[in-house]
Length: 128
Image (cartoon, rainbow, N blue to C red):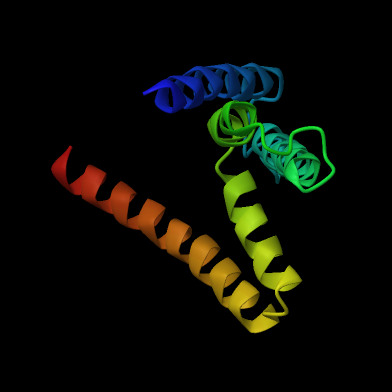
């Protein structure tokens, strides 16, 4: 139960951070071609997740600190951006010498998410 509480607390903190950055960089397609807030969150979250994972490896100061790893990586980084989890998974595939699997993961994740958003909007418009 404590692990769930650590993840929940971290997720709340990460979500508030994501919201704060979104307020600083609101996306207006008429002004920007890129959602700068989302882009910043995804890149920063992926960097921090990678840093924390490296610190969790043998010799790192988070090694064996399961509670802190859950709070920081799964909770804060996951609440800040799920893109960090996608990035870590894809990186792991590359590290394992699986470039084809990494490419498939990337294409399915991004393509699938865009298709799901499109379908959700269509269903929302049709039912709303």
